[in-house]
Image (cartoon, rainbow, N blue to C red; front, side, top):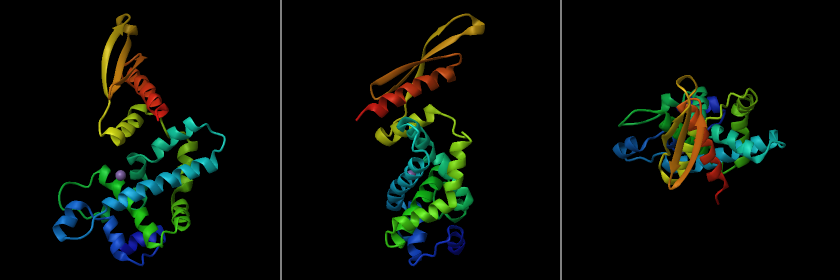
Length: 222
Ligand code: MN
């Protein structure tokens, strides 16, 4: 069954166990006494970060760093990796014994797959990047150019805070002003003692604005 994957990515593994490992969830590995994808995912995360940033900098050298960072935040998101994973039917090959195959697992396996190719190729980063670009570069550029990326700051912020503290920001309405038909909401977003206010015509709009401010505060921190 893994021959199909090899065909799809146009790469033949020397070590098939490594390919299998990339698709093996910890629950399955524990049951069968085999290896799972966790450390591959860790490495794959770093590789994909690099591939995406390199594409962005190469193709959009004139965009500001802040803009590139916003694009990157989406392009390395679980959501986008799930999109790419669909092209390879990743979900069909995952080995899991407990729980469901969810978007989080699919995203992780997608990352792990690229680390597996990298290690198997004798850590030939250039080769892996070439394979990745052949499959996905066009798609990535289209996504950027068609502005399919909505600036969803709540999602972007949450990804940063989950990574940093394993916590999500909270939002609360602190004020509602104006007449019934023209209300203005003020929302406070908070995380780890940091907070920012956002105003908007709806609660959702105010939350987005608060999230954008928090996102920018966090990005400026060292
Ligand atoms: Mn991951």
